[in-house]
Length: 423
Ligand code: AMP
Ligand code: GLY
Image 1 (cartoon, rainbow, N blue to C red):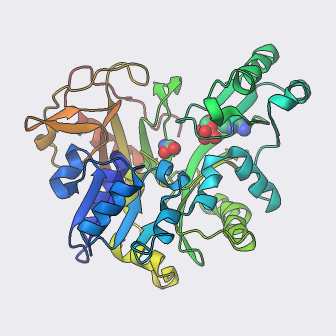
Image 2 (spheres, rainbow, N blue to C red):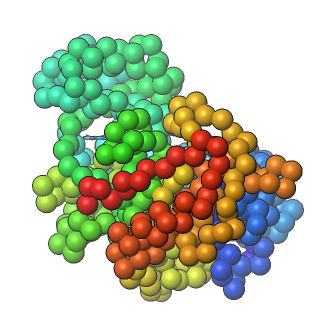
């Protein structure tokens, strides 16, 4: 079968690498892709949000399945666009429809879903400019630190955590009245601060059945010891050592099962990945957020641990046959180290030539932000390359990635050398 994969990051290069191993695959297209995907697939230079161009690509290349990497096209309704077009109705789309994607597109919608289905999460209230004073009063009733979340998508920047009440009130005003995050902060969710350690849990569902994928932990801060600004993710490991059998039993019973039953009860169709951002408070799991896609860089450690033919698994999702799939998970651990451009997550330069790529033999190199320029691979984003390795445990896997990352260089290259420090 011919498959179109949407996206251009490390998540998509990893998915492309895995799909490419399937005997069921005929031709793989990635839109827009990166230098890494260009080696194993045909890159199509179109935007993930240009649905008409995607339609033309699908029709012209006899594509039978579209796999959606990032959240944007899902929140914009790409799956619905396919279902509503007679020319595209028969094409399988891996990724939920717009209604379910609202779980990621609106924090308030996600909170209401969790409340309705008794899924443990931080206590909250939501406010608009019309209820600013009630918002101030709610902040006064809370203990610091204060967690303020823009309701809509804000490129990963919409969550602000502040330790002072006055700062929190000013921030609430900036979000609601001064539209700090544009339309995304028309509504703001204020919630109780939860103190604990975070992890990512992934579920793949066909709308009827589901499979729980390996857990992962990503490292979001730019600086060693989890300091400095938030990034898209500086590395990840899988599995998560503290997510042991007894903890995962609680996650299954209190969170995964009620989430899946919630989709049934609310009649929300869902075919694709559910990414549950969890926090372990004491011994108990709480949901921090839902995403409707795989995480990045979590994909770079989770997908390499799945032994199945991914095309077969996705076909089962599209045909509501996931119950017939027996997921086989690699026992070895994985770790990935993200190399980033100097200056990231603030201003950084692009177009730096990358050297050493072909010298990496015993790690996998997934491109995150790269492109080809005059036949050379150059940097094209903040996050540039993810170096993934296997090991008997995450420490061994990390050590291997750290060994191999030394062979790679580009001007301004930076990576965190303390991943796993907290485990
Ligand atoms: P989100 O965009 O919802 O994932 O939030 C971004 C980050 O803010 C999370 O990864 C957490 O580190 C932090 N965070 C969000 N909500 C809370 C909360 N209720 N308590 C503590 N930390 C939180
Ligand atoms: N690594 C977190 C995310 O993909 O949202």
